[in-house]
Length: 377
Image (cartoon, rainbow, N blue to C red; front, side, top):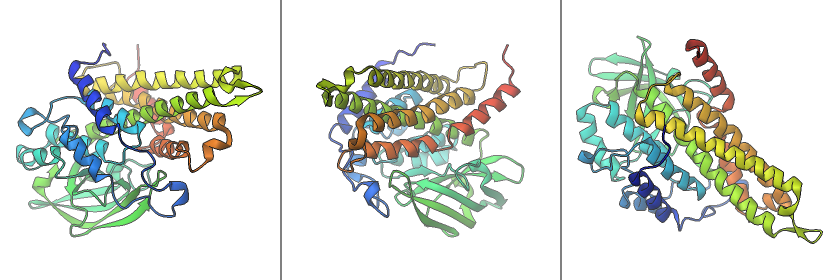
């Protein structure tokens, strides 16, 4: 494989850096000092700038006003967003929109794609299941009733649900197949209970009690949810990489200035070795991320299904970003826990990202199942 980025992918990353250049990671109250959510909604001004730069429609085809790019381009943009802790549903919105374009009917695409690509409709995804540890598609049941579907179940920790116009909800049918329903949070039979994430953002528990969804709003194509789940997981790895890279840079800058015994602590072997280990973590996170994104973007065959590469990337992302922020806190000393210094915010976001869609253990188990089903050699 060739991990060289195309001109179009690099242009998307450059545009993202321009949009995120003025974003302050501490624009909202500290999650450490807030009993509830740090803010009621996401950063609408930033959302509008992303729409103006055509970064909400990266994966859409030209017929819907998009750039026709791929998962690699999206991950490049997500990586930049994480460096500034951008408070927007860029991953969930882009992934749900891509799933609609790839697996939805022509009528659904025509109705949603262009508007969502312009940011006029906000999409999110219910991907955490009932507890955050069980498969999301098993948390909700779906049964057909004439031209409608009836959904029952609970999805926890739905990001940005209070701001979203539509939530993509995976559900299991009586025929043991997964479907993807697009539901409005305020619809009949649908309730939302407020939850607060580790990063301090306002999430919600989505409760569906005989919620009736029009058939035209349900994606029934085989593999739609599985593809969306893999794209979400890979995008989460990109967020972890962005957070980790920014935190390691902050640590290097601090260690180069902080002196003990008359020397910068960066010159001490114990400090340098720990920083070098975390640099190795980041390079492994990066390599496995692009492998997973390339598999999704290209559809190329491999020894394992693409889910195997996604699992490897998520294992490295979850464990790697945790080690990076822990080392950063250690090397910063007490200063790292100061709520007036931004590092603690990155620590909170890293913990949220580490466990999003399941921690490393979940993907280690999934990888084991894949290896058992597809013996290598």
